[in-house]
Amino acid sequence: MIRKHTALMTWAENNLKYFGNECNVMAEILLSRYDQFISRQLITHLTTNLSASEIEAAYGNRVRSRMREMFNLIAFSKQSIDKRK
Image (cartoon, rainbow, N blue to C red):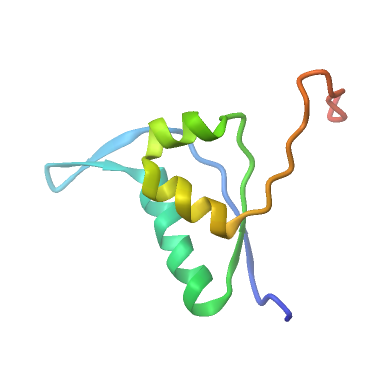
């Protein structure tokens, strides 16, 4: 299967007010990307330093569950050398 589009996402972790309601922007973006993944097979690339439990604490179990479906996890040990340097 050929994937049509790829999005690279980076975002500051902030909650915002939207018409007076508190909104977790990153969670909303991820849930929207999940809908695109299901309906149109659009893929999303994401990097994070958060653990699975930290993701769940920040964004909730629903987002963590969707991320399990959308992403392949590539984990590095703390002793891994950072190749960006």
